[in-house]
Length: 516
Image 1 (cartoon, rainbow, N blue to C red):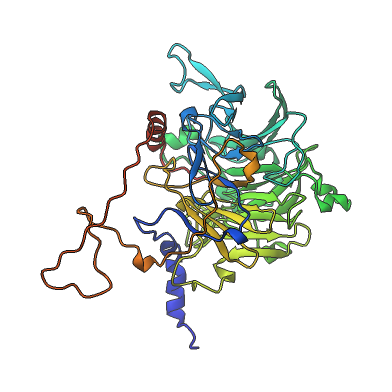
Image 2 (cartoon, rainbow, N blue to C red):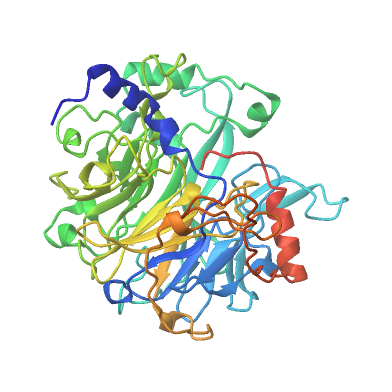
């Protein structure tokens, strides 16, 4: 085989981010691939706005549109309830007014919003100048539960909730402007805050070099909106308890079950913090050229970093959706004139690695797939949001969030289920979904359970879109002079209920593009 000329290889690498985002305007939605005998069959929670639950064939078995919940994320609970973000606060793009637990039929079972007092955003009567909000964004977890479904895992007993939120203040050690800092707090079912941690308080523990510190220091708001929102310097998008794990069982106290693992999308850093002291006791990044971090290779804009729970294949390993795109702080370069977004990669990967040796155990990306070829054809890419879940049968559920695409893959990398969401995301014109969770059928006893029917991957050459007269193009032979294509029966229109339509309208009018 001839070597690819260097100029073509360089051009391919340069164009890779562009090609990766070259999505068609019209494509099939719903379940497009399904091999029931190879899947961990159940329901899937999808949420990029309204929380929805679908079965393996893509049938909608429930939605929570009437509640106005934002699904940022939406976590299924045994019995059919969900834990999710309530309505979004209009003051900023990410934060929820409340953290809420909803029943199967959308009734509020528990709600918390009394963490921070802010200006009334119009959600309360005009005479009420201030309101209380949870500031919850990106994540939450009930203490004592695994990060996602594990067979026979214990349910929480103390009612304590871990919440990822925000605080706004000035910290001149980082920057002279208003900071939007990520915080963690624990709250009990009565609404009492029991514990709190702030990302900026541990700035010196993240391993930033002098160039990165200077880049963070020089940030200035580019608009009035930026000034009001504050500097989203850390942009944390996940937080979860480690839970029981083999490393702690062997005496490594860094991995105490109550310690918390999280990541920074902006800084390309993964950390575990000690719950008792708040200090960083384990870290990956931001420099991926040194020591054991080089084994993992460069991580860019990570999401959903977590430890695979005990009781699942790969237990104790760290897994994340390594997005790609641009992120990182450092010395200004050809990608960045101010030292922000200094690293770039044009594809995504799901990485599982040993947290002690930092050896990669499993990876799903274009690099370890036989086809399609890197430079030609589709490969995995979602430059923001997204997630990965280890399933009980050893497969992995991957949410390619920016495209609203969900796949279940085997250890060998075979795609045994593919689903493309037909539902709108918070960003107008998209079907994005922040995260996905697979749950067993018995967790949603009120859901309709339809037969599992295989879906053979379609030959896309046979998927032809009719014109406005219902005529499909003739593609399998040369058209005869004077011939008119035959019309095909039109599919019946689906009318949404008033509540669903109102919720979708609210989603479509949502904020400008967030980072996530």
